[in-house]
Length: 279
Image (tube, rainbow, N blue to C red; front, side, top):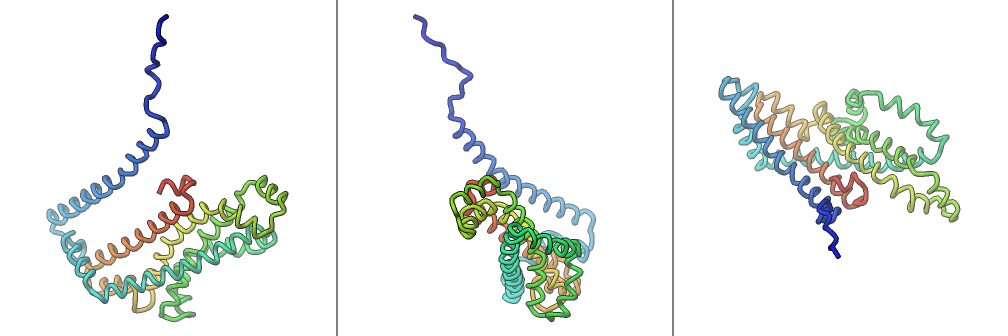
């Protein structure tokens, strides 16, 4: 009797293993392309400065920027300013996250509260928040409080809207099951609403933390004598353009650190969700 022929179209590697292998290879792409593109950009910048002879007051050479940035890293006063920006960002973000999540859950669950607050939320959202900074300075002074409030206000709305969306996106059938099991409101929140809305809430955090640092820096621009925003204005007044670039690098690194911290939190809390696994 003839032996059955082997189907050569059948993959020899199990599909999940292959997908995992491909995903692992894809994850390494940013680690290769990002330094490569950054290096090309710096090279173009360097060549442009050398060929055009442009004034360093307008565009300094990359070497001068790196030199000023390294000097900033060894300067205790610069670390103090960076610390003040980080403090204003984190405190503002903390209060925005706390109030945004609690209020978001309440708005999503209580219909009359949503109808009452919605016009005020929409009206507040359409106001350019930066325009409120001078008002906060008048009310709360030039100290750290006004910067914390600006950071919190900017971070608040994406967290609130994402929380409302997350709680409202829960399948009504799941709520019916919890009701049939005589679950209390706290149990419904703990067992159903919070886990289901967590991907949305963390996405709000991801946007909120970036806006919080923008708010803190803008607050430092317009009032006060502390923080990286103030240091940037000081550098501009002294026509120290390379130092301005160095401050911008410092701001970018802090922003990246916060963004990746939220990404780590997503991996930790929602590894089962696509947005958590993709980070």
